[in-house]
Length: 372
Image (cartoon, rainbow, N blue to C red; front, side):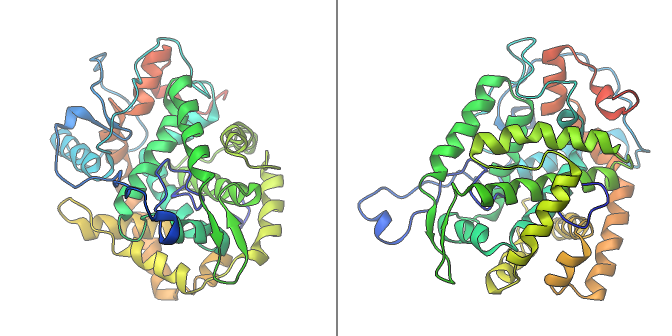
């Protein structure tokens, strides 16, 4: 994934949200309540990126994280509240503080913990993966027909964020339960695409596509917005580690190295298209309403920063104009400037921070690659 020009709202419902039923399938059955929630502010100490859940007080020593913070401490605290107002689900989160010593699915020595700890990178990378995944018509068909993405975009993003956070940093039992929950949902996500081809969220190939697009974008985002080139062996380790999630969801032949990932994208590119549904998906992303001040600026900043990560062939396929690409690069530079303040604001009390405390690991070590 390092220099390749190949590549989670998951196109196969890997965010843990229940699918939207329609037509005959919905007759005689109660309508699903949305897992998303309004932008109403709750107690910020009761919010995490994985829903509601008070956390235990612990060491509050000042963290020394990468980059120069442009915002003073009060502004960073306000920023944290605003971010959690957007991304925190109104649903109970598991206990990230116990049992002590439980490493979850990866543990503090994993590359996955390092990459996923950087909040600005994960935000930009997650949005970039949505754009990329939408280019596969069968993957997008599952979202189009069975999810509330177009009507509840923010709710879908929250569920996806929670799934990634839980499978990365939660203790093993709730992490495995999250995967099993998604597997059960996938069994009911199937149908016929616009071109007449059948699709299924259980399709191992589509699962691999969604997984690979996410991993590629997370790596590219980390290198760009954390200003930390990831050594190629560490990229390979990350890909090998993350196959655990993909294979648990049902994917087959998942790339375990950057070379295998490059080959995977070369095989998949002929399957990708930019059609009316893809265009509408990008339009929906570009018009999402955030429950915070300066919502339009924040949305455009992260979406532009996400688009700036995409490979040239994907931007060409999306018909992204020269002016749009110029704006994307401007957004990327702006995010690079404010990323240290966002990183600092989201660190203490975050999921990675609590997982490190649960396992007795040094949180700051997640940002050091020497000897990794």
